[in-house]
Length: 591
Image 1 (cartoon, helix red, strand yellow):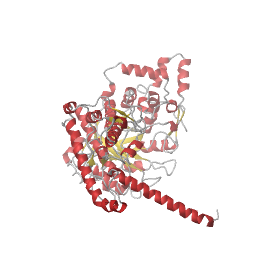
Image 2 (cartoon, helix red, strand yellow):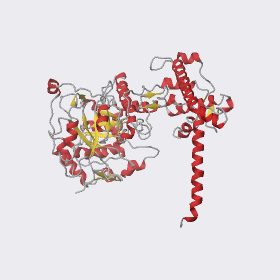
Image 3 (cartoon, helix red, strand yellow):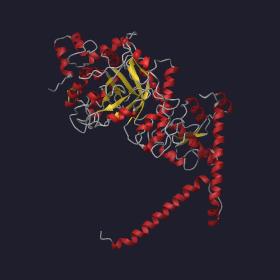
């Protein structure tokens, strides 16, 4: 039988009997962790007010989960912890009334919306989950109400550090100050909650052999976020990575994130191999379990739940939490709570009403039927031998990622570089519309200083700067290439002169993260540019002498422009030739 809960009806009933106090008890799962729940606006306000006025948070009594070896343990009783989780992030597509009413937001953070999280908490408890995965956190919102409620219900949170528009992008990856600031803000927002199990620094960034060069950027973010947590004196919250299950890159990605001096604290695989009523032996689970038997950090399914067959029977749960797999895997996270057009949900939200789908009942039963047992931390330590870290993958047709990682983003250095420029990006130009500037400028001047290449391990001096700073850098390079006259700093209104360029003394006084002065980095970059220009000129001269003699003129245009001009005329010739052929054959076509 489908269960439907109406927030409005529950609240009206409270008003009818003039029992606001009773309604707040009924609406508050912190005090009533069983039964039907409906969140009224007034009761949410009461909960929020009472939490905000208290300096001593009751959620601090929940024992954090810690990673040791390749397993998770409860830090208080030492019992091994197995994740029984579900992905939990609504969107407008889910039909949630809160999401539908949200304006000017890129995503809905359910843990910043008490009306959502408190409404859903009884369902999450009914499912039997002990963990939720939230893919985007709103760092400008308060999370106390939801985290306290979830903590009292024994539910932990794994939060992704990215948001839809700020992450390491697989096809054009960068690890820059914008992404670094976003990730550290998430850590700052959530570190105080003991039921934060961990952070994902990336999700399926490298998803096939065509973009393995993106992995060094994610790995460097793991390094820097772990370092940031330590530098702030926060609890040692694990930082890991979530990958897909691509056959060609599976082993290399897994090795890469635990090889060398930098390693993820845990590793998740979005696993959809088991569909319908499969088995441990037929699904591929056996092969995956053997492959990861000696993996050095905790590993789990960061998503599971193939939906080829609906309703999903979730029969993989029995195998995942059986002795066949629990020695290797630390559980998994079902995908997902909210039903959306992709048809992976276990509940349907219509306005404020929650309807349990058939998938819900199957998952609830499967979770209820499993009770995985493992070693205690003390028992584990007796026999524990740290697994040997794998070697970093070698370059191959399936793997093009260097073990050399991008440097830590340095906002001081980047601001200093920007202040040293004579000509830069106009303030009115939007940051999400800079592609054409890079396309134009990097066809004229050398842009190595702002580029990062994960396949070769080569990262420019300012490759960690944000997009606006990089745009200003290349605009200034074009400006200087054109002679550096003031009237040349316009570029159709995209650029403007810097009214106060920093002096060498000012640049010399600024110390960057590496301990070097900003001036020394700028001069090192200039030396690198001269080196590259000399190398380019030598190669151009060697390959261009015969062309110049044949054409009867010297190198009248700059080396930077000759390649693009040749390419332009080659394309033009091709177009003319194709047009001629088309005109010739057109009379013979019966069209």
